[in-house]
Length: 229
Ligand SMILES: Nc1ncnc2c1ncn2[C@@H]1O[C@H](COP(=O)(O)OP(=O)(O)OP(=O)(O)O)[C@@H](O)[C@H]1O
Image (cartoon, helix red, strand yellow):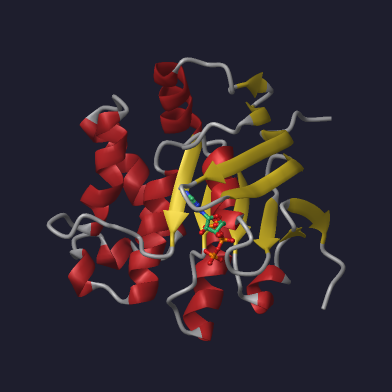
């Protein structure tokens, strides 16, 4: 039996503003196994992004524990948490934030150079990911010369560049038409499986959610197994 790549244990998070207190995460539990793609659905404002931020070590929960590859992270010093996040976690957002002055390959090479990979190996890895995502012909195109779906696939390749254990995606197909969403999702799912990573994908798109290995629903600050439409 393999080990979970991501485990959330009883995560609590309250946002305190001048006006009020918002208890968005109320004891969230979740386990992701290698190769799994799990959908995260729930109404707008229910806390999906907050949950992804906690899982991705961008925010520290008030209580509870986030384990990456079995290692507890909540009490790690900031520097170590950042190192774990850079090494083990990849993010894909609805608006992909590719660097406009660099081409597709360079956008995938750069995070690897920052992580200390040699130029030669980084280019090899970028070309491998571009091929897996059907983008070999677009390697030298800048983002403005790519379609929305192509840009999103480059963003997926960039997120996977450093072989993270966990991929966290927030509405990765939110700005795409249905046919392109479908292509991008298939590319994401195949690549995550091939890389042996695990993915948690927040989406409002029920067609996409139905193609996940599993879907969890977020409501009232807690997760429940999805019971279908
Ligand atoms: N830093 C913050 N300070 C105060 N309130 C916040 C903060 N971040 C999020 N919130 C509030 O917490 C709630 C959950 O927000 P979150 O972005 O996690 O929801 P979501 O499910 O991702 O929504 P959507 O589907 O619209 O993206 C919202 O009411 C939001 O306004």
